[in-house]
Image (cartoon, rainbow, N blue to C red; front, side, top):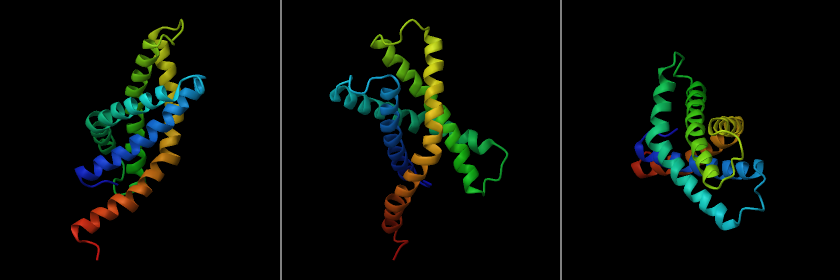
Amino acid sequence: MPKTKKENVYFGLMMCFGMVVVMTFYNLFINGLIGIVPIKGILIQLILGFIIAFLLELFIVSPVAQKMAFSLPYDKSNKIFVILSISFFMVVGMVFFMSLYGLGTAYYFNSLGEESLLNSYYSIALRNFIFAFPLQLIIMGPFVRYIFSKFVKGQSLVETGSVR
């Protein structure tokens, strides 16, 4: 887990990159757009989605999620409880905001159909949460924590002279 602001930024970059890539292709798949949206359009969506997700994660979602997670009454010395609670609140916050982004994108491209904006948002958010929460807990969270501990944390220890 990140301990400094610099480590927090690196961890956020890694997590956002992985989640945005997987969630973008998930949303393209469930909306039947794989093979329809050109590669250039997918790349633009990935870049724009990553920038928006990272800024939201860094400045809004992560600080709020951490405050909420640490305000809960549980044993904070148990690392797994800390990871699960922060992950839960991070996914809820990111799904909330990124589903708004998805709704805006769908509205812009007139792909909402006849459904109301509120119903469309609930549908998008529910589908995203159902996929993002297990993705975060089972795949992306452990993978990014592993990569972070091997490359970023190890680098930080070497830079500070803690590792000889």
